[in-house]
Image 1: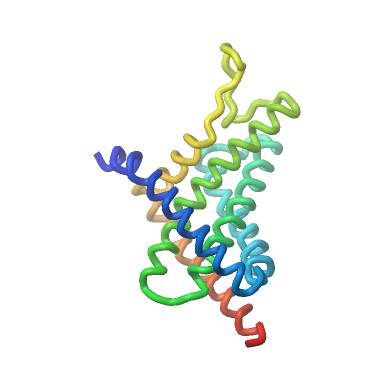
Image 2 (image 1 turned 135 degrees about the vertical axis):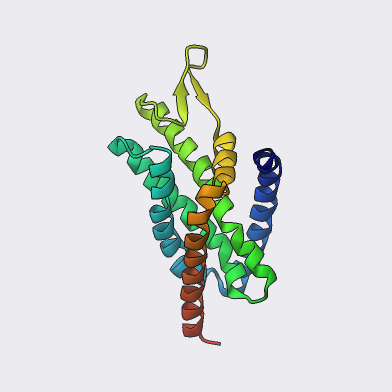
Length: 192
């Protein structure tokens, strides 16, 4: 029953959270010209994302071939930079309600990873003909099965499964805390 509830409620929460964070990011970019995003969120987010990509790479067995491992790290870096950029306006301010938005970092990051890796695998299949997991070869036309939205939903939901959340939640809190620390260190250097 719990899994059914997660599969129906989490995708909507994912979309609403992503939209709310994107609006907050737009306000933040106007305020400081995007300096925090460019100098802190993008590089550190890409590094965080590359490290976080090892979890789905390991659990989903996506690290077997060098090409597939490279797509995992690239998708992780891109999703990490995206989530870190979206979190900048949330982490710049204070207040207990902001913790709720920060907790959305895990499903948003996992969903973004699933969406991006699907598209990367599709691009590789179109360019080289090599099929990886997210673009499955099938006999019927068009010759492959491709579902980036399903992959995004599945990764977002699976990030909250009971055995995984016990490991992922403390790591997510540590990652968000460190990013917030870096943002405040950078903001302290800016002239008032």
